[in-house]
Every structure is written in structure tokens, then in C-alpha cells.
Length: 440
Image 1 (cartoon, rainbow, N blue to C red):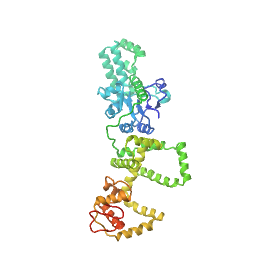
Image 2: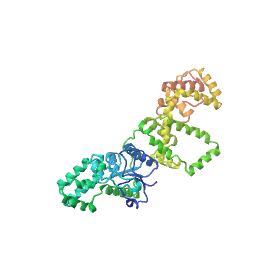
Image 3: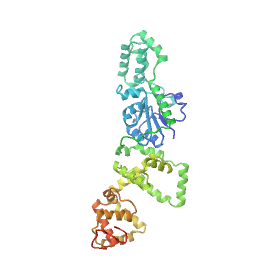
Image 4: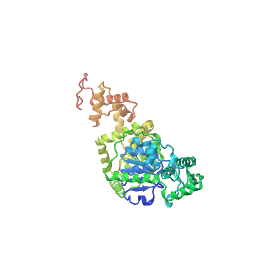
């Protein structure tokens, strides 16, 4: 996947023409960087972004991209703002505007704001960003076109204006001296400073060098907090829907499922995921962590490199894997919340499959069996390792809740009855239990 850069008025068409290895997208708005992350580029550059009248890109979108191993660069405009706020988390700021915000020399968002025309006009500038006015006036002072007090006065009067009203004609009007106004106007024709463009070009150069050198984003040094607002953000669902159109390869796989007879069953299971999303069942951080741990444990994915390889082999990426895990966690959260409501449906499913009589007969027989006093550790090893063929879970209380029991005590009571029903009482001394099932 090509590196992605969000830019608009800060760069010209000929500025980006030579970067054919990059994908350029319009100024970023809320949800756009999340969608870009799902595409799996090695790097994302943020130069321009919307904020007035449209929701701005969230800090959390950038943090999530960093946790996915994607390097995020920022410069010039919205990119400089976000990089100044997130550089300590691993976002890479570029240029003098970023440095000024990072170091506290600049603090107001309106320093980089301007109004501009639509894309078909080349994002024609209809006002002048304050950072460019400041840089230009500083150069004019340095070159002796105006004196320092005049430069400071013009910067202050420009700052006092609402950002859409900052233009060079207005700056010239503020001078008050016709001769100085004429000299500065003539100088501006060839000597204006476009600081935002300079920083944007520097970002492209740094991103290009990063890609060519094969550099990689380091592991994040922060924990990404999974919140309900993040889980339920409408643009996350929109991004999933936009990316949900099947490729030719995926269409061919679906045809194989139809031919094998498995399509209908898998569609029912997929529907469960879709319904869980519709219920807005936001899993908490621990639920997502458990789901990911279970997923990796069942597949022996011990290293992050193993996880990435699994995603690649299965035609997805880390963003797609995260979506799967979110769905699993959401289903589990919803199932736990509504466990009692599901009992009738579970029994109806048994009837539909013709399994109800068998389970009923065994349940009635177990009720007649006495419970045995067996150490819990032995019961756990017998049930999980011998019966289910898996490791004993680290959190047995959570496992008990996951199967619809109140907690660990009810779980061990159930195991004790099942053990008595299955192996019987072989001795009055159970200090070293040995039986036909090999429990010792």
C-alpha cells in the first residue's frame, strides 16, 4: 500500500507531481485517518485538515494508527497542530510551524487557518494564514523593507482580525504611510514567505526518505484505551462498510462456500456479528484484551510478527484483525449481558438439531449422582486438560461467567457433580485420586 498524504491548500499540484509513489487525499477530517489506517500503509502524512464547520481529525485516530505500526507524520497546518500535541506518543512532526507549536511559541489554532476554494480551483487561497504573515513580515524587517516596530504592529493588527479576513491588502492598509505601503507592496510580489508550503515540502522529503530507507515505526509506548465513544463512532462503521465490498478473490471464495454447502451456516454466524454491532455492545478494554489473548493462544501466535503473518496469510491486515476481535468481544459482552434471555433460544436450538432428548437424559441422570469432595485444582485439570483438551484458563472465574454461571463456586460445584457422574466414587480416600480416566 502506498504512503498516504492528506493535503490541500498548503501544496501546489506541481509540488506533489514527482511523488508518484504516494497517494494524495484531500484535507483530512474526522474518520478519514481511521479509514486510511485500515488500508494498511507504512506511513501517513497529515498536512492539511478541516476543522471549522466539519469535525476535525481526532487525536485517537492518530494514536490508533501508531498502535497498528503505521508511522504518522505531521506538518504545516492540521498536521503541525496534531504533531505538536502527539509527538511524545510517537507522531513525527516536521518543519518550523510544528516546532513553534511544540515549543509553545505559537498556541492558537488560527495561526494556520485560512479559507480556500474547492479542489477544482486548486484550493485557491481566499485569505492568508497568520504563520505566513508573521514569517513574511520578519523577512521584510530583516531585509530593511520595514522597521521592526512596524512589523510588530502589522503582525498584531493581523492577529486581531478573524482568520478569514486576513489578506495582504488589509495588511498594507494598516501601514498608514503611503510610501512604506508602496515599497512593501512591490516587495511582496516576489518575496512573500509561504511557510506552510515549505514545511509541507519538507514532510514529503522526510516521508520519502523514510520509505526508501526501509525504516519502521517503533512499538508504541502507550496503552490505547478502548472507549465506548470510539467503539460506537459512526465513521468507524462507515469505513467498515466502504471496505466491505468483496474483491474478485473473495467472491471466488464465497462461491467455494456455496459449493461446499457451508455458506448458509457461515452467513448465520456472520449475522450474529452484524447484529452485535447494531446493538452498540461496546466491550470494555479487558473484554477486548481477553478476546485477543484467546485468539492468539488458540493459534500459537506468540510474537507480534506471528500476528502480522497470520493476518497477511488470511487476506487481511492488523486493522481487519482488530475489527474481528472487536466483534468477538462485542458478541461475548452482549451474550453475557443477556444470558438469561438466551436460555429458551439455546434450548430451541437443541430441539432443532435433535439433541434435546440426549442432553435431557444425561442431565436427569447427573442430578441423581452425589457430589464428590475433590480438590479444585484436580477438578480443573480433569475438566480442561482431559475433557476439553485445552490448558486450564488463567481466570477460571471469568470462564465460569462466560458459560453462564454466577462465578467460580458454582462452576466447581458443577464439576464435582460431573466428576461423580462420570467416574464414580472409587475410594473413600481421595488424597491421590486414580481412576480409569487417569486423574491423579
